[in-house]
Amino acid sequence: VMPPAEMVSALAAGSIAGFIVADPFNAAAEIAGVGKVLRFSGDVWKNHACCATFLAERDLVERPEWAQRVTTALVKAQLWTRDNQTDAARLLSSTGEGRYTPHPLRTLTKVLAATDYTSYEASGVVHHKGWAQRRIDFQPYPFASYTEELVRAIRQTKVEGDIRFLEALDPKFVAGDLVDDRFVRKALNAVGGPQVFGLPADLLRKELVQV
Image (cartoon, rainbow, N blue to C red; front, side, top):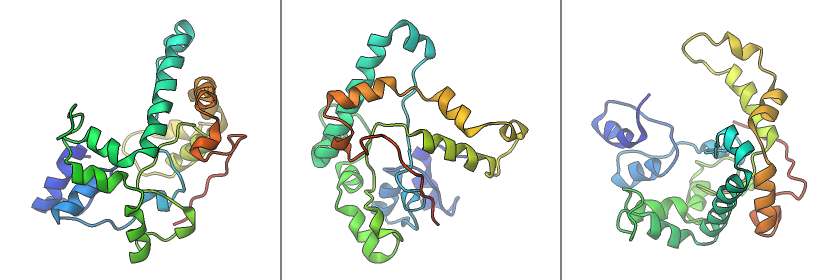
């Protein structure tokens, strides 16, 4: 286990042979000439989630209006970022007005530009060209099917410590207990519905995992 910010330098120094992590650290290693992408996780699990938004349950109960405003703001930001990749890269870069991240503009542009992924399709790094993936994408809906499949996958993952509790977990119960989609559904409707993100109107999908 290593902090993502240390991965590129560790790879350059030869103290690790490789890493798996979310961008922009992969792009940073490529640009620095110390690493190359062997496979994208999104090319193994189609449209898998990377990050999720968590709020305290007490806030959902006691401050639902506030929780709705937070969720709606995030959904609007996701939609804007999808439609304005280069502007988003400029805004988030280390040379942007807000200096929101320490990453150079070149690195973030490589990550956010929708055209970058096509070069990996041409080189053979991407196996499933028909999946129409992007290097990084933004969509707000937490599909219950994803959480259920994640629980099943965790059961098969080798981790340290006592993991016997995993055997008793019911995927459907976990999805229902952890995910509250009331707020994101309202937020989606506020920006034009699921279709603006290319999501199905019924917000249902089947998980596709292929190595």
